[in-house]
Amino acid sequence: MKAFLVDCEQENGAQLYFAPTRGKAKAMAANEEGINITEVSSCQRKPEYDEYSPGPVPPSVLLKDGWWIECSGCGKQVWDDCDEDDPVFSGQSVWCSAACKERDEVREASRKADFAALEKRATEATLARFPGVSVYLVTERYHRPEPYVHFHVPGDTQGIGWEVGSGFVECAPIDRAAWDAYEDRSLASRRGRGDNGSIRGFSRL
Image (cartoon, rainbow, N blue to C red; front, side, top):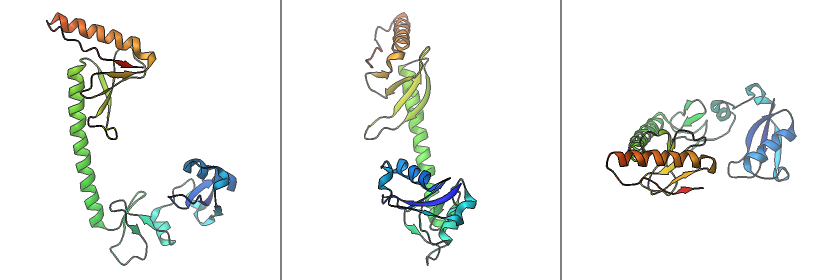
């Protein structure tokens, strides 16, 4: 594979691509940016990076060649000849200083701990509302106050979705029968324990 520097005049600026031909490199860039290949403004060969095929090129190499890279911690531009602290590398990530990397790691650890607590709470709420299901994913949805839980009931194929605390679940048409069967069994079990309350929600198809 050959290295090409392709500029689509988009927010990300010019990017390196590895492809067998110039046309393939332009097509890759256009597809990634969601534009027509005719909108690609330039495509230059960069043979000095061929040895790093299929990519990516190490950030330390790019910095020495005059590129700038965004700091993974604070977002500032990192240059090889900047007058501040030496940059710190880890894989393809770059931090402007060791102190910035340390602050970033503290933030990430806190974020993971917060999500683990949210995941635990959401899973417990789901199992309390829908006994016997198998939770396989908990996500946060943009502008939604509660987490969204994905779980399986016996016989489903794509899984069931539920926003914690809501009065309905979501499932694909192919899983409606499996969900209805689960609801019927659960309702019968609750009534057998003297609980006449229904957990039946609305299946959004």
